[in-house]
Every structure is written in C-alpha cells, then in structure tokens.
Image 1 (cartoon, rainbow, N blue to C red):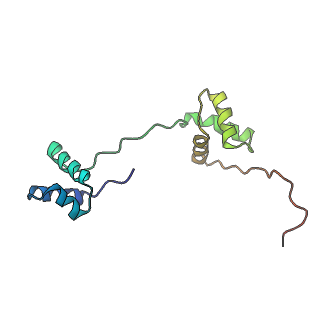
Image 2: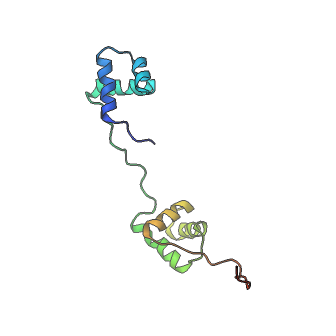
Length: 128
C-alpha cells in the first residue's frame, strides 16, 4: 500500500472544486486519478476534512513475545535446521502451523542468526 498524499494536495483538490472547477479538470491539472479526486471531495462533504484516515493496524503477529521461546529453543537444539524444518517442528511443539517465512521473521526479530554447516568437506587444494 502506498503512503497517503499530502494534506496540501488534498486541500487544493477541495479548493478547486469549491471554485467551480470540474472533477475531471482537477484530476488532469493535478495529475491525479479521477476516482481519487472523487474520494477527496466525498470525504470533505461527509466529514468536513480531507485528512487521511489512521492506519488500520494490520494482522497480529503469529509468533508474539510469549511464543518466541519455542523457536529460540529449537535453534539452540538444531542450529543447522532450515526455516522449513523449524516451522514443522514448531507446529508440533506449539500446536499451531506457521509458515517458514514467519519463523525467519521471528528469528530476525530476536536477533538470532544461523549459519548452516557446509554440506561437503572443504577442498584440500587452497584457492589462489
């Protein structure tokens, strides 16, 4: 989602409409979509203000501060596990299924990084 347009621009749309300019002409002159101009004018007529509404909040986290203990213990027990493996084990232990991306975000929030062990032995020949 994009950031809200400036209050100044919104007020210019309403001022132009109050001076009698048409919605399409306002949209062209200020390089806005016609629907945007209609919304700003409708909001002004309904509320008397063109200020942007506050952010809705979004979805709550699936792994909150109290639920971070399970992934923390899993990383200590299995430092080489992938995010997918941690998500599967976490689903069994915590009783709710979460995605590997959710596990990764939770670990980053906790400041836990993992470095997987190399799958093959290092080469005996040094690199030049």
